[in-house]
Image 1 (cartoon, rainbow, N blue to C red):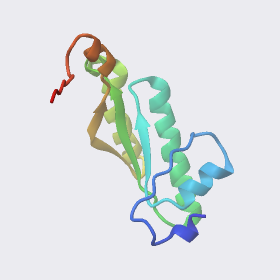
Image 2: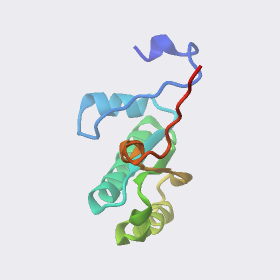
Image 3: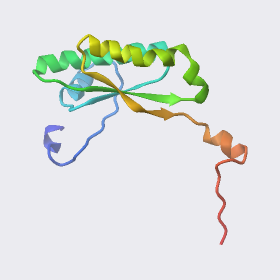
Length: 129
């Protein structure tokens, strides 16, 4: 299916679970880049390391480098003081120091509760004609 789409699109995004499967490996094998979201907790950081390892292993088998990019997601303002949040940058730096083609995006995706803001009367727009 992916081979049929070659040249049709500039970018194809696939969201898949990180479970061990032929589908996951096929997606990574056919990827130009693997993007892994990380939330500030130990399990997510561990999963990012596993994704870097899997991506590197598949790249080695394919005889090419598949870049692995991490993006910090679901960051609430109080979350920036968590120990897990402070561990993300050194963890990714350690991956790079150990030869993994893994980087961390400077952009972070913050989490906000828009419904709370709507209930509180903030962030809404009312138009009348």
